[in-house]
Image (cartoon, rainbow, N blue to C red; front, top):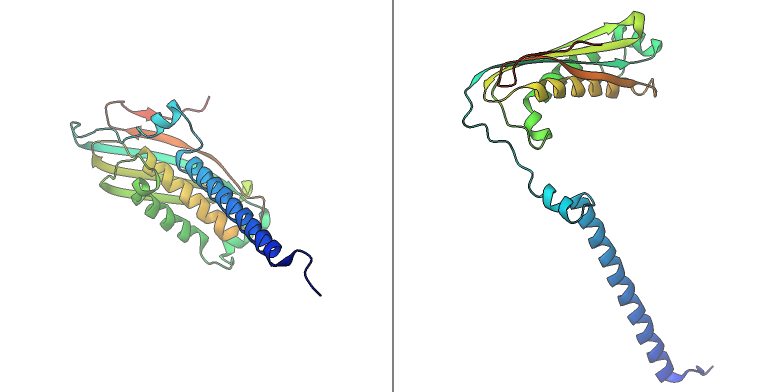
Length: 202
């Protein structure tokens, strides 16, 4: 059967189809570029973009090296069943308390790699305590971090607590989807120009 459009009509339709294909491709490329720009700059524009591009670490070179100490805490609320398994050390991933403790210490040492504007500090010690409280179905996490340096170790102490809490969550989540991490805060800090701080709940 002879094509009613003829060879010329077929070629024209093919060209038109190719044009539409190229136009669609360019449109997708523009959309991808817009998404990339928004992701890179956090969807900011104008003065906000200018401010974001001027982020910087604070200069601490002229400060004296002194002993800095910080304590932080947080808690993980779990079900009675998970608490029982945790105390029996019968969770599939193994010893939750030891894993969380090690994770917290490691996190304290890696804080400057996780928080963009933190200075890398020379820690002299990092201690993390994992304290199960069966009567409340929660696990309390405490950290104490020390350094002899030019800036404080509050972020290191807080990061240690948060990562330890997340490790507990990870190792227990198969048995409890309602785990809550809460009440993460600084307990105290010592040293530095801003002076000492001690948390007092009102």
